[in-house]
Image (cartoon, rainbow, N blue to C red; front, side, top):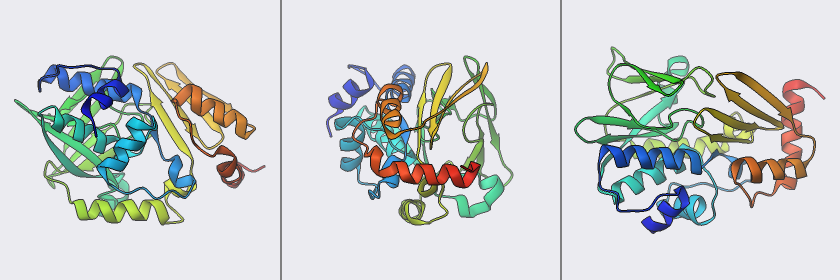
Length: 267
């Protein structure tokens, strides 16, 4: 796990002192260089939380990952750069699902002169860190909101066209045992979103590109454009050109993608 290899992967070079400016630069660089994706689950590849495996996948092999991987890598890199990084337990859609959602998301708090929320594991959300302060936070045209709840949790509200709307978290060290349990469940439960759906997301400063099964979705403040894929070679081309992802056995997962699409929308 070589820090210089990570920095090359995201297009930065040192020296990078542990300052607010460096925090923003690293967060934003990884946001645009490393896509969000759960395609290994579609291929039956088991994903553990081992940092060396995550580094090999996202840095050495140039793939993307889901929250345990993208935020796991970001947290490791920031700690290597000298930041005080706290992994935090979060729950996507805890507002709707209750505490059963806790642990289905890993996010980070970086402690400098104040606490900063860092998160590259939601697919299409933060490009840069935001201070852990209640209220609205803007990044160019994107608007986010942090809400401090009466039960002590914080709630992150995503921007208007984000793929997910919210998650809750505590500003406290993560429950790593809960992460292990949720990591296993999300890969094996037949009703898990990640088991059911092939997904990849690439963020850009003012828009995002999402692959969800056969559908490629470009979303920005101007609206949404969708394209339907009709063959595995089209999927392979989109993964390579839009997401920088290669090495996925698209022929093997294509029948599952077709079946899921038919179940949702019909033939």
